[in-house]
Length: 171
Image 1 (tube, rainbow, N blue to C red):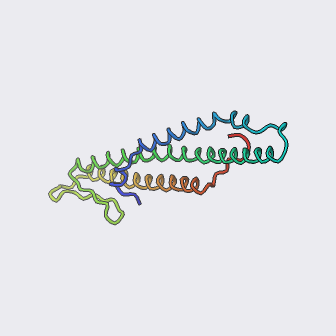
Image 2 (image 1 turned 45 degrees about the vertical axis):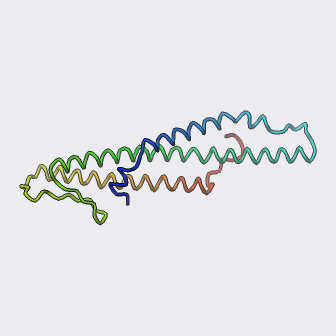
């Protein structure tokens, strides 16, 4: 489970920038589609060397298709994760301000998020409700961040294992 310090140390804006850069690279690869097709040896070239060249070209085209196919889900996962993490980070910061603003202390020991009133605090139902809402917001934000982290890791692992097949036609 993601903890508060870990979440606050993450850089969702930097993650989004990586996604943008990957998208730019993907577009550059897609722009090569015509050149890839035009680079295939023509049918007028015959013989063993010609067939070998066409086979080699087709293998490289298929590898490029796979690369482009791997990039698309990674970009989507990065965009999703960066948005979720940015929101979660902001939610935690806002909730911590609410809790601390009322003089309460926050604890995340044992994987649970709790808040304790100051020793000299008088019971105030409104404050208790605001603090409990903030505690719930932190717990929800941490769970969202944990899911986003796991989802992104799963997509990256699938890409690393070459589980995305780009086929053998266009990029």
